[in-house]
Image (cartoon, rainbow, N blue to C red; front, side, top):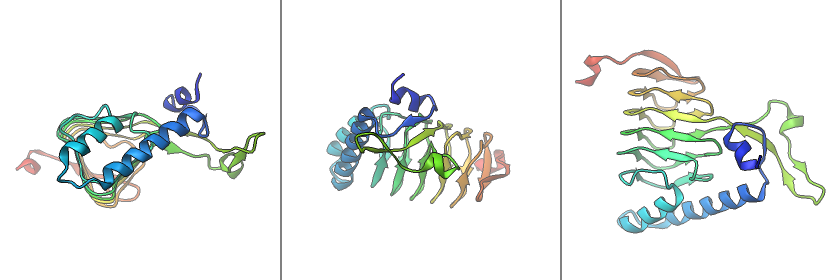
Length: 198
């Protein structure tokens, strides 16, 4: 099993693996290019985004700046919008449905690091190469969700369709469909009803 296969399978993996390092470097460079292109240069931005996130619907709009670890492990549905400073550390699959909107300064962070420092600390290979052993858990966001400003979504979380996640929330557990959820840790306040659709 390759380190990439382990990573995408939520197993512990070596983050210094050459294939993974190359993938991150490629994505980081593409993010930098995207972030430097003026918003009015739509075609150039779209070309970079297609290379960076090949599984994003062409209707997706990412304001920028954006920061992705790989880009290749993200699926983005139709009519997606992300405001400034959208960050996705996609070392596990990230699936985002249709008509999902993100406010500014939001992050999706699948990585999971050990609680114990002996497992978490930097290690060194025989040739002196530094590395860590980490793992990651997938994130899924259903259709028609609004993720307000400054929200952090942690690994292993599913946000059901039609949810609103309040500003500054830290989502550490699943949120059922059609919920209004807020806070740190994020908790469901109530179910959204037909009255909320007016």
